[in-house]
Length: 356
Image 1: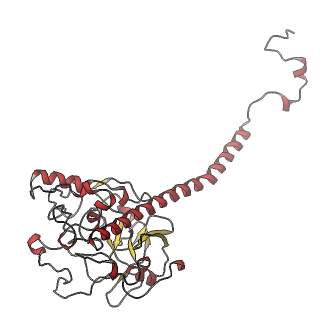
Image 2: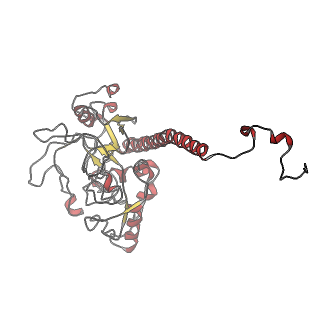
Image 3: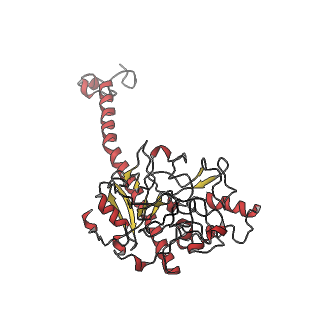
């Protein structure tokens, strides 16, 4: 025997037990290892997903904090919370200031107070209908704003316009099929609904005498008791229930089938439009008889449309910012009456926030 020849074993190795000889994994051992790895992955994956969702919830809460501060800063600058504009057929106009003369909604009006004044000023001083103005409007309505996007639902990108023909009376450059717009995952609190949506005045001349308080039959409606609605100018003194007891802005419910399609009537417009279910929500109804379950908050789901409901894509809660600037995660099963009361600024029904 040649001891240096690698083809032969040493005398010592010949007498080693089989268990101590060099050998590879058996098939059974390999399967056991794979099974153990699979179990570990199964145990860790939910924890990883939960951590990611927690991060998304934190970002969503921070977004609402930023938007609510935009409301507060607007109030400090003008003496009232931002108006929700003229109606859903109108977009923001940089040459028409703030308040009742501004056709754009609250999203347009808070832009200077969330460090986006340049976006609001696009098209300023340009002739209505001019190529320059049209180009500016397309950029304005199509610019995504991360503060308006919940990361648990979708990305901050522009989505195609697929309904309603022309986007707005003052944004005719954007039409169905050839334009993209940025969308909002948040709604401002308009209190209790007392009528259906209005397109708003037909033109700027009519706007000077237009009164949103009259419905299509000419009947004057009860005032809306939220903090922003068509042509509103509501100041802090009118929030008699207290700023910590009144919703400001929060997450909206959306049929999950339509996150990307633009087919939902509550998600077919853009961030900067006037009063509309895309950006305004209700917590209750002034219609008689009142249905407790009409506007309950909902978790996003397929197949169910909810035009004015608050809600979210999160597993168990939705976020609401209050008029004192605080943000709270609220369970979907909150008492509907409590939810309604939190949407009203002056119903005399104060709520213990520690109860939900």
